[in-house]
Length: 340
Image (tube, rainbow, N blue to C red; front, side, top):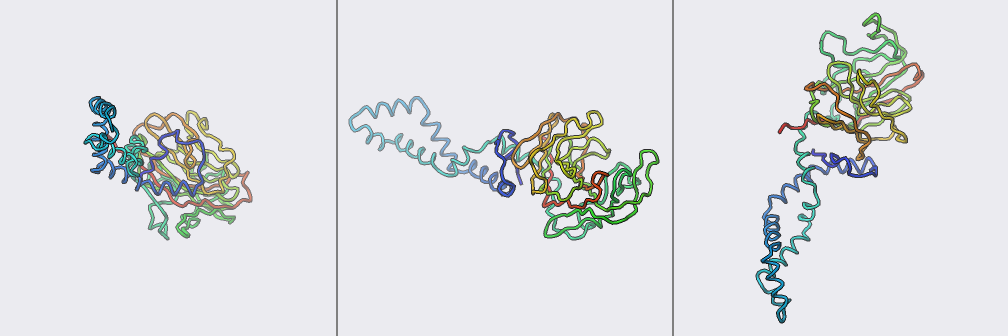
């Protein structure tokens, strides 16, 4: 897939319906293929050759002289040059030529520079058969990955709160007593009793910090914290596709230096709807999109040369007490930018 349509940040100021935008995404491979097919066709080569011919001063002077003669229009139409001009006008109205001329070549090149590195449309049924692992990714395999924090209300079960139904990944947050490992700022990792259970997942597929894109279609239910982010093997920085607090929706980046400085609140956008969230980045900037719209830009302060990994989670804090809910994901796709 080559979703180049929004790499131009000024594409539109009108938010497309998610269903329409998804259809556009899915049409992109055919668009890119058609563009290159037209570009290499004999018809397009003929169009460019004729365009060069009729734009010369000699051609224009020949036409001017001929049209000044008696029955000039007829003479011109019957001349070799006149036939060339007529053929050019015919090709100029051809649907493939019109498509090619209306397509931004730069966006095509940007699309072709995207290298798929991770994709899931959730056709699996067992977590162990998928590309996902429970918990969080850390530098040391000895560190407990599937842990909560003592200021949270949920225990992270080892995949028991994760399921795939009808091609959709669902992480459920449920009210049920459970014990599990939790990180305490003073005591370190301890066993803790919780009143809820939930799930967290990560993909052990490295995504380059230097240039890429992550895109996901998701919806949230319940007054539960749900989020999707990219990070390295350290806790921070976190590059969020979205962060839903149970009431408000945010996107942006959290760093040790700036904290939440580059987190943007998305007003008037209900997370209970299916939304396509996208983040693109190069070595200079990070851009966030909701469906087709650019909504936020920030400097890229991620550690140079460090790979990132995709994380999904749901959690509860004291303010969420009594809540249950789900994080539902239809698909996810991640790309690196190919090095020139």
